[in-house]
Length: 476
Ligand code: ATR
Image 1 (cartoon, helix red, strand yellow):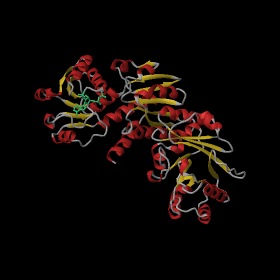
Image 2 (cartoon, helix red, strand yellow):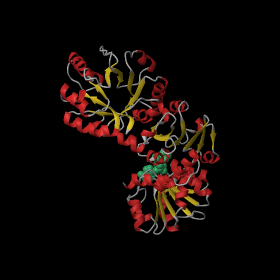
Image 3 (tube, protein in one colour):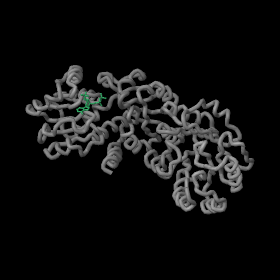
Image 4 (tube, protein in one colour):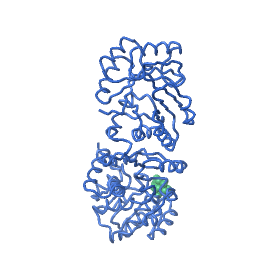
């Protein structure tokens, strides 16, 4: 039973509403009947629902002009609301400018803006005659999401939520900012607002029932972040530590605003991905010498208001590699000269490997190899490298099949750094050639363990927990 979730019941028939209520009443302790989605609003049937399901209910009859689904006239709507009020629901949801008032009922006053987040103070001033002031706004950044959450924390009668993809942050983090409850759908089909998260995701991934105002926030920043398995890996560990991990989409031009809000909230750390690994450096109070040498940061640790930056990419990759192949004195052939190669090559060289770097854009390969102190050249030189031989071939590009499989040396090691690549022609061919495969998810797991250790210190069993969550996500 999850007390902070309010499940939204949409019908549209009474029979369907009964089915939804059967599930909802087993899962949470508050529901909202979105009567504007019901095909018919028959008072007797609704009374029966109240009797059949002794769970507190919110009644909502929202017009299309307010983003709801009630298509009758405004007069009819107000009449219907008066009738519904006689059934004495736990709460009645009325728009902030709805002229009706009820003395003997608790009222949620709602303000929606489906385009933007308006001035919060001005909006709240417009809202009167309510027990709860519900503010639902379309958000355009995670900075706005954190501002909205902070506003809710500072105004205890406000229930704030974001809409749109950035709204997810406000839904998941709501209990950390004093929300009375959060609206959620049973499944994606019964969602009533963009950004609404379904109950299963909230409870199984984010352990929503355990979140509270002391929970520490962690997360991934960058863009894109949607494909990342970070939330699955980290929350598997973090829910034992009163912490939660979210994916925050933060494009380059949102970084400044986001970091300003992060400082005001209860953050413990962040993972950093493309395109922010270098851009984040000016926001640090301190940088670990290794991250400074690599010139990129993928982990932030927040301690007493100070931010320290680390880089666990290379260490994670090399730990995954060295679980199978010791690299000292071995020849490693990297394909790809993007941001990801840099940290892995630096760590490989530090562990005594001999590195060659090939890239489609030869100039980029030459620049990076000179910086790293290894040899480099055009991808066309792959035939020569094949003739010379190598111990480990690493796909560090963003594409699954960057080279013709004929250049995979039988019995060598083959690695793909992309977390989700498992059955690409490149890897399947390598398997057929009896190569020892290092999957991207093995590197991902190793670097996630590194991050957890930076945030919480070393502890037994972390790798097993993360591994289980990641393998489940990849192999089902
Ligand atoms: P970054 O990591 O710097 O953001 P990216 O666009 O993600 O860069 O690309 C990462 C690597 O994948 C680069 O080395 C890129 O090669 P180029 O420098 O020649 O662009 C490589 N890459 C992308 N698409 C590729 C392809 N179709 N074939 C081979 N390499 C490719």
